[in-house]
Length: 108
Length: 114
Image (cartoon, rainbow over all chains, first blue to last red; front, top):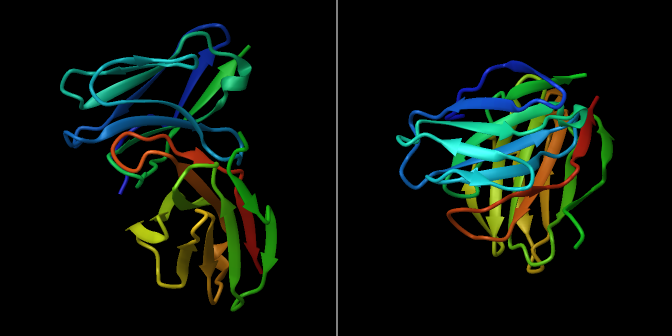
């Protein structure tokens, strides 16, 4: 039921920006794009979400294309502690369908 | 503010038994969702409760059930356990009732069925 497509894994050098893409071509007009991450088997951690406009918070930036069919999560200065599985989710209610996510490996 | 808490953190059961897991949401949060995470299927939505009513439901058999109390605490129950029910069960709470909302996840309950 996941409505998103993400690369299985990505590498990023420590201190560099990590850009994680997500395709959600069937997104509906009232659905939001959420990003979460999960480190080991801890509970997923909320990162950011948006509807149409780009968003930024203390953790990351979210860039949503004008047609809303894809988005990119940007971690501006990746650290080793950012190594995790990152999930992109589209939802307009409390019914999240997680895909397989992207395993981000931050390397020294 | 305390986060989402789940009890117990670890549980071992045998096939055929039943189990009840508990979730206490963040204070003031009225929506509680449950998820199952397994290596093969990933994170799957079970159901969501709001104001003591099940509002959303995923594609799980009737052996999986839940409820929510007036203080927003929630329990989920799995009856007639099967080996495939071994998983990490995650609970998440949220404040906003519709549209845009952040779900805050607990640490999960690791269930092992022998």
